[in-house]
Image 1 (cartoon, helix red, strand yellow):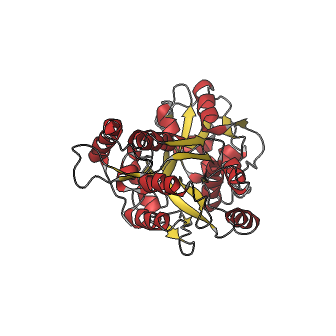
Image 2 (cartoon, one colour):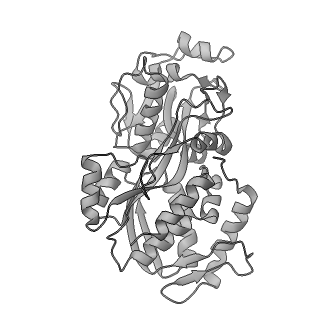
Image 3 (cartoon, one colour):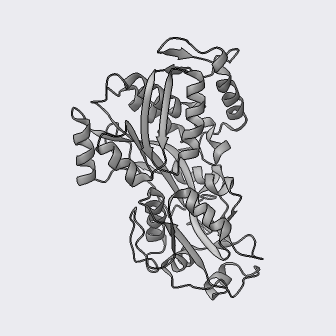
Amino acid sequence: MKLQRHGILAGLTLTATLALAACGTDNNSGSSTPTGGSSSAAKIDCGSGKLTAQGSSAQKNAIDAWTKAYQTACPNASIDYGATGSGAGVTAFTGGQADFAGSDSALKDGDEQTKADARCKTGTAIDLPMVTGPIAVVYNVSGAKDLQFKPATLAKIFAGTVKTWDDPAIKGDNPSATLPSAPILAIHRSDSSGTTDNFTKYLAATAGSDWTFGNDKVWKAPGGQAEKGSDGVSAAVSKGQGSIAYVEWSFAQVNNLAISKIYNGAAEWSALTAESAGKTIGGAQVVGTGNNLKLKIDYATKEAGAYPIVLVTYEIVCEKGNDSTKLPLLKGFLKYMASTDGQGILTKYGYAPLPETVRSKVATAIDGLA
């Protein structure tokens, strides 16, 4: 699968979309298009009322951009998204406190899926991949620039077996770097986090002999410093000399954090870009059934130029059994998010668009919501 690129057109589309307030419909529902927009510009299906959602902080910047564009086009719509973390989002959804949830991991088979299905009553809960969020390994080390890490080195750092910046393992990855003999401050998420789940999946898949803690939304390794949410991790790295952490690319960019290169399965040092992250997502397999579009990511991909530490944020929603009074707004907002225009603005905010082969399946699944 090839990642679809919308670079320059994305900025133009967003500008046009945000101009819709002057020409948006006064009806409670309908379709809006930018005045003077091209025939290729996607129409926005406007719903009215309010949606409440919560979950992944990884996708917060994307949701904020989509919400601004959609509410400008549809002034009778209100979307309230709380970046409470993936675990809290799933709990809120299954408890009926959220119309949809954002999670950096698909629903787990078994109890989690069963509870979500029960909330939907007349249908099942499905996972819709929506945001490609590369995970950056960020650091704050005085005098050290352009650092790079092999999977085993990262595993040892976050497991606590490599404790100082001048350790031979780090020196081996960075022979030209000036590394201080200072302690490493490894920072991880304190809350239940899909970012943690995906980062530990990467460590388990690529450095299993050095990372013995498996994968989970909750951090399992001893030691280190815990911070809540992507904002908390980013702030801690900004202030913490000698620190290293994993955080979504979007937050690394917003906070001007130093981002390391990662050694991939093709035996290359790969820098994090939308294109390099897209190569990894492009090789993902759909392992769900029907409209449940759960993906399996190959963290050890041998694709040339691929950046391997990535996550996909899913919107978890009922396939059937949604509140009929909210359904037009729910479908309209999700449809815009999954449109080529909606995906096209993501590169401005530190994300990568979905590959078209995945995006089109997501759009079809949204059309079938009831």
